[in-house]
Image (tube, rainbow, N blue to C red; front, side, top):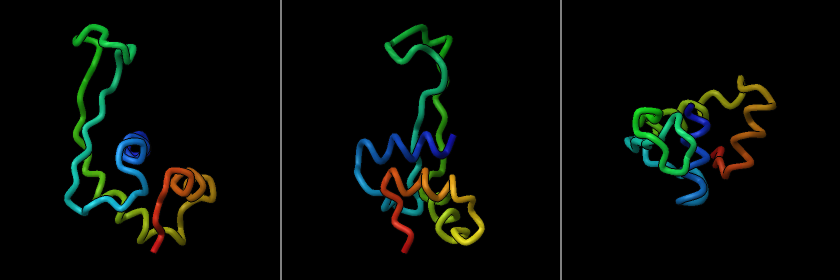
Length: 77
């Protein structure tokens, strides 16, 4: 879910220089075209804190995860 939130942030703001206290809202479910509100759920994720953790754990992340984050503008330093 956090990767989805990071992609959403990247598409809106550009490189992932996310403020530590930033909360990203994502919509889960539904068809993405204004379908029934009953089928959708809004989640608030602490994206800034999650990005910080990914940076601090870079040495232990899988190559796949590093590639995914780099592809959406992750700043590792």
